[in-house]
Image (cartoon, rainbow, N blue to C red; front, side, top):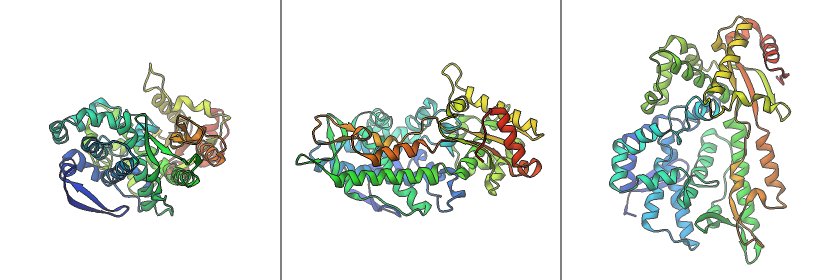
Length: 426
């Protein structure tokens, strides 16, 4: 790689060294727009410090990827300068297709395709424009696309289970939410390559490296804490669902919002747009002034989980079926109570909430081939974390403050129980 010419002072990692090739990518319009998109969406309404951006996370991911490359070389892996160039470029652009608050309406309510699966967005923000020109000139379009989609060793380093992306956002999200916790840098000592795949080496002199195991467990615990306390906090879920509901309403109106309109929007641009439309103003202002919808109906556990699959997952033949099912249920419940349909919002996360980080391949004594960490026998700490993670699933019906005041929580809860046929825990 080229001579380092710029030092960026990061509040999480300290000095991050950037070379001229990095700056060519960072200074494109496509990457600079990430300064206006918060990493954690509406989490700042719960944790006021959580205003860090996807731009800073991208730089942090570059830093962690660089450290992983150094560690892999120290452990005997052959990584060329060109390989490192691909990894660094991929780290900087891995989030470039994100739109404001995208995780909520891509992953949870599925109103739009995932950012990394949307061909139109990839074409507009990676393959075209200033960023596309920079990547094409260096012959990086295809290698970067492969890495950001998780292909090969480069994909493992960037977006695998325990990877540069995760190592940055765990530290960064903890820091900006003010939650105490950190993991030991010794994690970098254990990265190695086996048959072209990234592996954590937990073997030394034929014995299990307990230090390696405890370091990985620490990371998984921190990831669980963030998931429980931040990513699935009920107020974040509610405010995110409000944004998503408003976006869905804006897209469906005649001559309304188009997905490509959001490519160049910041968080504030999208909120401003939603506030400017009569039909979505109430939801937008609810987020602006923190008038967050309240929990009126809650279901958790395994007993009734499958009943709520149609509100999250659509069959291939009808990709919008889940959204239609939510809209129908929201309208029925609201109408039965004399409320407006936007007063009721359904939040239905994935049925299969899993701690994918537990699937990291590990090399352990007595095994010729790496195993996934979750399949290593005699690790009750891992089994417990995986089970706790799965239990975080909650199905919510949120109601506006006005609806709560007008008809009361009990009436809304009972209307939901009649509609879904399952009692509420709230």
